[in-house]
Image 1 (spheres, rainbow, N blue to C red):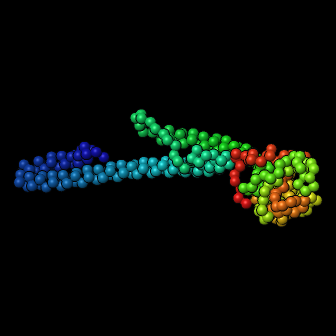
Image 2: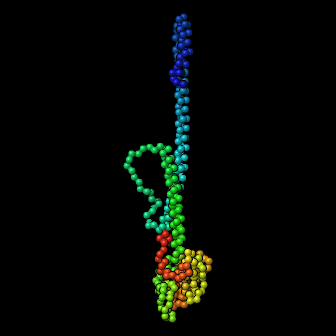
Image 3: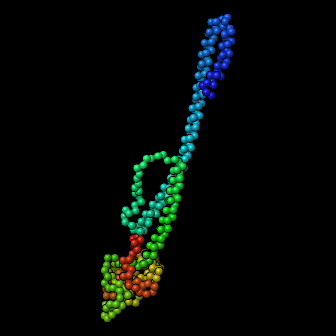
Length: 307
C-alpha cells in the first residue's frame, strides 16, 4: 500500500464530513471551526501510523528476501567447500604417491620436493570469477587428478616389479668393507699346489664377521658340504642361486626368507680352508658363473635394506 493510496482512502470520508459541517456551520460557526480542527488532527495522526506500518512491512519483506539470498549463497559455498575437500584429499594422495616413487627411484634430494608450492606468476588485470566457471574449473582439476593418479599408480607398479627383479639379482657383496683375496677361474691350489678351477670369489674376513645375502631369496641349503664346510645357499628365483661357504656358524635355516643385505651366517674357516674368509659363488640356470658379472650392479631403484 503506497502513501498516495492511503491518502486517497482517508480523504473521501473526510471531504464528506467537511461538506456536512459546512451546512451546519452557517448557523453555528465557532462550533464548526473547533470540530474541523480536531478532526484534522485525528486524521493526520491516523495517516502517519498507516504509512509507518506500510514501511515497516516493506522493510521486513526485504529483510526476508535478503536472508533467503544469504542462505542460498551459503549453500553454494558449502558445496564448493566439499568439492575443495575432495580435491585436497586427492592432492595429498598424489603427493604421497610421488614421494614413494621418489624414494623408489632414489632421486636426488630436492629434485622432487612435494612439500614446496610450485612457482607461478602473471601480470594481467584480475576480474571476478563467476561461480559456474569456478565449478567447471574444479571439475576439470578433479579429472586431471584422477588421470594423473592412474598414471602414477601404473608407474609405481612398474617400478616395484623392476625393483623386485633387480633385488633378485646377486649384486651385493657378501661381506662389507672387505677386499677380494682370490678371484674366479683357474688358479694355483692353496693347499696342494697345482692348477685348480676356483668356482667363486674369496673375500678377506675375520671369524664371526656377518655374512650377508647378495639378494632377496629363500634359503635352499644350510649345512655342511664336502670341502665347503658350513655352507648356506640361497635361491633367488629367475634361475639364480648363491653359495656362501667356510662359515664358522650358520644363522639361517632352510625355507627362511632373506632380504638383500641381511645376515645369513658368520664368517670362519670351516672345510677345506687355510684361514678365515668368505667363499662366494653364483649359479645361473644350473651353471656356475663369475660373480663379478653381478657385483656392484645394484639397481638404481633399489632401496637400502637394513639387516
